[in-house]
Image 1: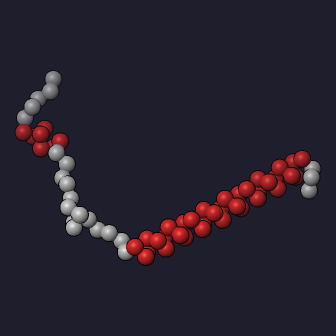
Image 2: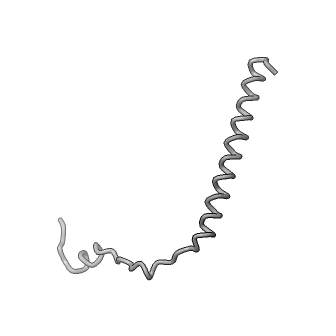
Image 3: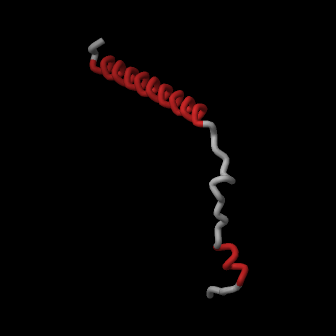
Length: 63
């Protein structure tokens, strides 16, 4: 059973923030943060592929 009272209607409405009310980070800091993550993930991928490659070579007896 659904009740249509004013309390249910006010809970269903979400507040909308204006663009001036939202906090934004400086673009340079955000770019630097994204570049650090990119380089870190790249090094992690290269390292993990190297480990898997050498493990396969050792398993096959090619090393």
